[in-house]
Amino acid sequence: MIFKQALRRELSFTTGGVFLVLVTIMVTTLVIRILGYAANGAVNPEDALVLIALATLGYLAVLLTVSLFVATLIVLVRWYKDSEMIVWFASGLSVTNLIRPILQFATPLIIVIALLALFVWPWANRESTLISQRFQQRDDVSMVSAGQFKESAKAERVFFIEELDVDKSEVKNIFVADSKNGRLSIAVSSTGYIQNSEGGEKSIVLNNGRRYEGQPTQPDFRILEFNEYSTKIRSKEALAPAPRDREKTITELLNDSNPASMNPNRAELLWRVGLPLMALGLVLIAIPLAYVNPRLGNYTAMFYAVLIYLIYSNLLNLTQNFVSQGKVSVFVAIWPIHLLALLIATVLIRNRINPSLKWWLRQLPASIVKK
Image 1: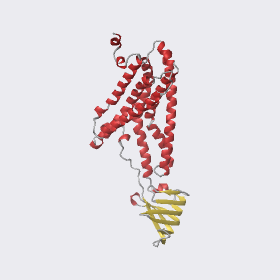
Image 2: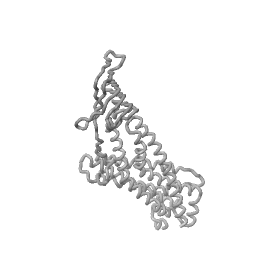
Image 3: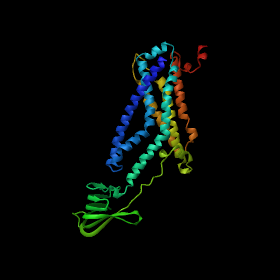
Image 4: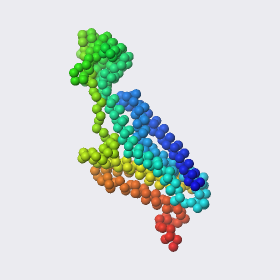
């Protein structure tokens, strides 16, 4: 009982600490990336925090998988290094006695990982896409605000309005700069109004203004005066784009009858189901992998842990690509990687049970070895 309580307590604290560190690194990376998108006009700066939160939610399953694996290694490596494992072994426990309490701790987290991968991951991706698409498809009228320069969605037009009366649809001191086919056109006026046309189109009509076309240093530069100058602003509804496979729910992945998307849907389903299975496999591998000679006190187990995680995750992604391309059936691809991880964990655990025997004798049943 004392053994299980101590193990559970240290696993809880260590997993929480590792998870917070990973989330901090993830959020920092996302802040840099999404603020870069906002600076380039790809996303609305006002939506940056929402996009960062959605992206973090989407990757929580992966972060929890890594946290669980690393925390198990850190706790057991410290126990070996501080000779605590020797005390437990001397009291009659073995490596196999670690499996049950560690799995009891890991099982709720693995269930959470499965729920995050199956439901939260597609929802977060879908919401992020809708926010980005809504900004890209925004109406140019929505960008017009008093006292601010606003750029259109395609970066072809810049508006500036000093005063805006929304109720009367009147505007004052308007500046409109258009860039089409490499030619610059600037229109300025002291007064104007917003005109609603049939079909949902809107226009800004400038009264008694001046228009400049071309470059002042070129011979085709022109200055035109006008009584009325209208520039169209199309009102566009933010249409929901067709969801990608990473944005589809489980029901959509299973019920989609389109032959072109059948393999990508199965590949996406393979990845979502494979993530909690990978978490289970990594936890079982971490138990024997954490062995450290107390006299040496090295952390080579961490190097092997990073290598194993990279190989495991890359094999899962590679299998997903094969299924997406139709090279491998999803029913064939779903079990070999996780079965291999289970076999590796079994072999490593048996190697740690009786290190005095040769490695091939450790794989035999204890009754045969005694004979």
